[in-house]
Length: 298
Image (cartoon, rainbow, N blue to C red; front, side, top):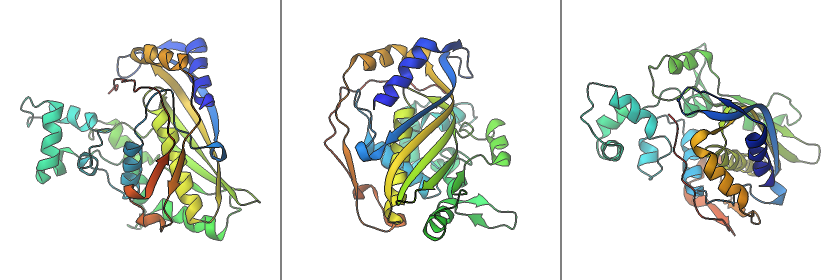
């Protein structure tokens, strides 16, 4: 993960100090790219512990087309909890519950979860249930799988998350989640049957979010490669605003003082793409430094 560490080091050294939407403040650069070669190992950060189970569950949640946090809460994955909680706190229904109490209500009360666990038109909606002009829902992931199998030379192997109409709903504050950060991703199949994936991410929290993002899209690339009988090669991460929050700087500096370990490997069961479950992924030989807690900026 030297590419990741080099990028955060560059941001600390050359980034601009900026105010931001959350009021936290950042050090940031605009326009960054890193390339991770999956043939050299699975790109999971080793200079701190990263919870791979959270990443796998979140990705499978996206691929279900789900946009309610109950699926995640039921599996003890807290990644998205803060956003609907903040919306709930601003409502007349709020009764001074803590975040922990809010999550327990999501877990135990289906009607409460249906109302307050919904994030709005986030990744699952856009990837799997993109609304067509004729009333259908388009499964962009299945469309790309079909294209890769039938026309691998195509330069149109694209999945878009930036649905302008839905983004306006998120920007307006009618739903709890922020506008999608992972804007668009594209696959490339080489003449020697390797497959690459490039993500364009408009905004990237380098300390907390990006280690998850790298691993998540690497897993997706591996899943697609297995389904299409190809060999996964490069995950290319292109970022618009690459930032380190001011309250993450100390933790990032601590990581930069640590020596990276040899990357782990990830094995995926031989099953149909849509039938894969959390139990079908096995991370091996993951040696890492201790966990570093980074507060989330809402």
